[in-house]
Length: 167
Image (cartoon, rainbow, N blue to C red):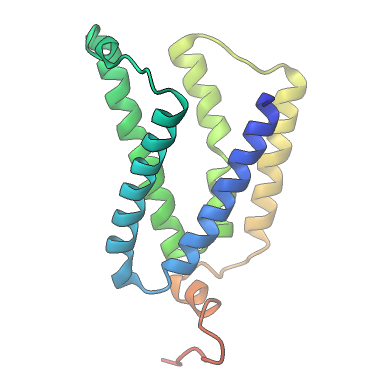
């Protein structure tokens, strides 16, 4: 599979996942149990897929280097933070707005790559494209006006036939 198709499929899967989180998170008290279950189920499903694709994995190489173990721990912590913070953003607003802000991650990736690996993988046109994406994101968020309260977001997701309650 070409890299660009894998990246597009990843974006489609994330988008569907965010939409489903928005639907599941309509009630705050259900957030923790739903999200905990989904996180565990994701980990088990991904492990099963990886064992299916690569049945002869040699896990002994994981303990050969403390630096590799440290990088893996940082990966788990960063991934856990990314998923948790995104879920909290969806819980408090909606999947569309959360993903529009999350799309700024290339800026962090560019900065981290430059700082830690001393590399920049973009040329001038790549930077221009990045700025256009970020500018478009800012315009969409700005066009939403002052509607940032969680109640306003939740009122848009009421089950059919229900009206929002007035304070």
